[in-house]
Image (cartoon, rainbow, N blue to C red):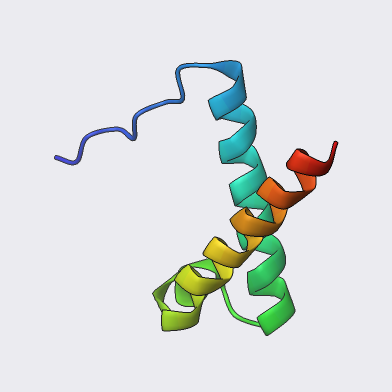
Length: 62
């Protein structure tokens, strides 16, 4: 039997995980794929890295 996924321990981690889900949903809708299919593509990881980098740059400016 599979273990339940570990829940975020802090509010900040929870908000980041929710943000990740929103971004994944948006990217999969943009490409016209299901989220599961999109995550399997080699480009998904690089897109995630690019989005994280942009978010970090945006927070540094504030």
